[in-house]
Each structure stands twice: as structure tokens, then as C-alpha cells.
Image (cartoon, rainbow, N blue to C red):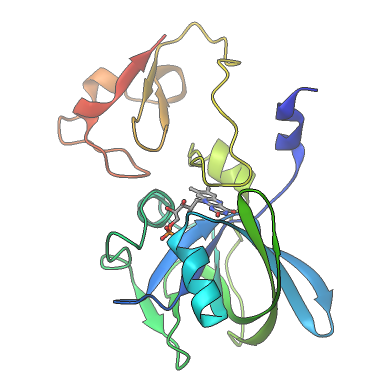
Length: 220
Ligand SMILES: Cc1cc2nc3c(=O)[nH]c(=O)nc-3n(C[C@H](O)[C@H](O)[C@H](O)COP(=O)(O)O)c2cc1C
């Protein structure tokens, strides 16, 4: 079987907010889906190694901020490629903390909701948290970002901790040179851009995770 057939499954893009030990924290997931409407229940799959997993287990609660298409690659890079165990990931991001001590993003989201864990299922690598929605924003706006949009328009990638991670198999047989970010695997292809990579200013940075241009690797 070609594992790439799983790329045909559809997802959205979300920030999961948790109460950290030192400061509020959040991480990116694409695996939120609704299970039931009454009570309103969702599920999310979170890697065992993620700080988010540890904090959901410790507190029994989390928030979901539904990212809109306007969410910048910077926010996804900061929350999706760094761990809250090592740093204050939200320090350059606009957010508010709910009465329940969990953060939600303030900008470029369609809506948010607050969840209380009601059940968990362990797999080899991820915990699936089942949770009831206890509160949420009064309204919604904007266009929700899909996982497909993130890949095709923002040209982002997912790290190994994402349940939907697919290793780079070199299936892309384009003869064009690719400039690849060593951290988040963002790919800059001259054929898809208006400015060739070499002509980008020296202070240009990876739009997803902020790695400097000089650290990009050329792949044929
Ligand atoms: C597009 C994208 C989708 C992701 N989806 C998931 C996911 O569904 N589940 C998961 O555990 N991690 C997912 N991740 C990876 C986590 O966001 C990442 O490992 C993060 O650094 C975890 O931070 P934490 O240690 O603070 O929890 C995704 C990352 C990206 C960029």
C-alpha cells in the first residue's frame, strides 16, 4: 500500500491551549474532530512526548482555537515546532487566559472552545483525548484553515510528532532545486515563487519557523 493515500483524508488546523507549570502553553494539532452533538464531544490525538499531552493529563482540561486562513506561518512555527517544556511559546503571540487558567489565541482564529476530558485511549505513540465542550466563543468568523491549505498555500510541513506525519520519500521528481528549512522542512522552490531563493535578502527567514536563510539546505 502507498502510505500517501492517507493524504486524501481531510483535517483542520487548531491550537490546543493548556495550563503550563510556569506559563500558559499551546501546540498545533490537525486531529480535532467532533464525536457527538449532545453532549458536545470532540476527540484529539496528542503525542506522548508532547508537553501538551502531559499538561492535559495533569489538569483534565484544554482549549481549542480554530485557526483561520489568516493565521501566520510564524504562529504555526512557534507552536508546532517547539515544546512548551523548554520555553514560553506564547510570548510573542496575542492570547488571553480564561478563568479556568487555559489560554486561547486572540487573533486570526474563527472561534475557540473550552474542553474537559471525559475519557482517554492510549495508542503506541499518541493519546486520544475525548472531551466535552464546556464553553466557547459567542460567534465565529473567517475561513477555517484546512490541513490541505496549510500544505498547499502556506507550504508548511508537519513534524514527526504529528499523527499524520509522512517522511519525505523523494516522490517529488521535479528537476528544480529545492531549498529546504532544516527545522520545519518548509520547501522554497524557485519555480513556485516570484523571487528566486538566491535573490531573497540576507535577513530573509523561514516563514514557518524563523530559521535564517543561510541555514537552508539545497536538495536536488
Ligand atoms: C501542521 C501540524 C500539525 C500537527 N498535528 C499534531 C497532532 O495532531 N498531534 C500532535 O500530537 N502533534 C501535532 N503536531 C506537532 C506538535 O504541534 C509539536 O510536536 C509541538 O512542538 C508540541 O509542543 P508541546 O511539547 O508544547 O506540546 C503538529 C504540528 C504541525 C506543524
